[in-house]
Image (cartoon, rainbow, N blue to C red):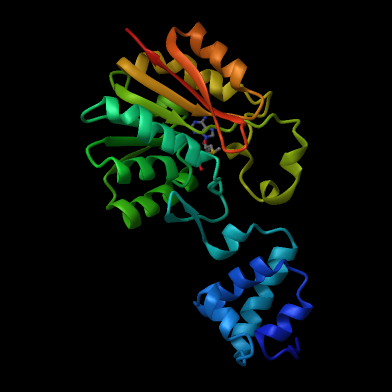
Length: 278
Ligand SMILES: C[S@@+](CC[C@H](N)C(=O)[O-])C[C@H]1O[C@@H](n2cnc3c(N)ncnc32)[C@H](O)[C@@H]1O
């Protein structure tokens, strides 16, 4: 293929991608910051770098998520490596982590935390980083997700998290107990049209939906929690914008108290939780 363009500025004039995505891809190809790109947009670009950029641009235009092209996504100020086979971290999950860090973990001196459905490990690793006195166990049913999580744990926090494979509580021994259980499970209903749009088309289906109404995994997590929580232990889950009432009802039915939901910056109830008194 002939590549007639010679500078980033010339490429920008012709690229169908939004400018921010162009900058992110060029930054990735050249290993430079956005500020450098703006200051050097008339510098000549080597042919190999052109080719690399054009390959990435073509994959982006075919629908590959930016996070998979770059190989990472930032979460709670840290760079988590991701790729095909694992969910891309979402900013709304920072509501879950921030709430647990600020309002739940301070109740415990040395909290033992369980993260169910850890994916790339963002929740477990962020909690371990911010609360070094905690011990953290993280589970996932998917071996590919667990390998990303272990890699991120090695890079970001020295790998002091126990990763276990299995379906929800099946990954644990029946005697295991925790002060705090957190989870961002697949909660999109199978019929939701968003599954066929944007980045979701490229992400693993089993990380997005329970294949039914979106509440099945939330229900399983809530129903199983009392067996694995210590007295005064807390469960906090992320859920969809319209699932807070159903989630709170499930928690009340299982004997949780202090059940409430927390809104994100757009006033959408994103997480719900409660405490168990045994
Ligand atoms: C919405 S993703 C969340 C990933 C990560 N915690 C995050 O917030 O980015 C849900 C995760 O649950 C995992 N999962 C799906 N079914 C599961 C099951 N039956 N048991 C355990 N984990 C499951 C998926 O593999 C996926 O990694």
